[in-house]
Image (cartoon, rainbow, N blue to C red; front, side):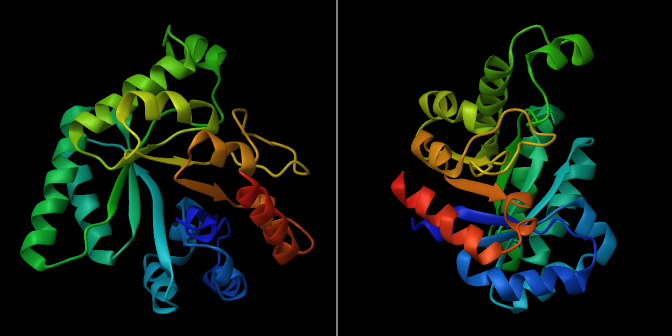
Length: 239
């Protein structure tokens, strides 16, 4: 897979016109664009179709987390939007993930839809060992918890997980090289980590075995996003 196909640019904006401007300007530098809460709520689901009409793939990052019936219906709606990939929270449990995956598989077979990749969110990159223990009452550390949730997602038949770069190796060791790892928390060496704590550079993430890296602020907040992308590509290629 080329470095461009491994890079997903996060459209962390609220307006459709701004998002489409970014897609037009940076589309040659990424394999897909991420539509998250801010853009989806601000612009509505039509933004997905507008990006796809430009020939670009969409990673729908809405982190579905609810009872199995509700999540499976949301998954069907995402599938019918034609997204390339979407995610669910692995902490929703095994039944939720299985029901989601089965509903998507059935709909794709019956309606002749292209099946999206379904990814389980493990532990958010804003959390560390201390917050897991003190706030969420999870006594084991982040790496052990990510491993547990990744294995649960694998058991459910999902295609991979979202995890920080620091857990890539343990996921690949336990779930296999073909199990996808999508990594947020990617920051070039010249960009501060902000609210994300478990971070890495593009080079470090690729070396660890990331299948996709997700970057937003590290590109969009730069004075020259294209120059930033050129430097990021060099980091990825050097890995």
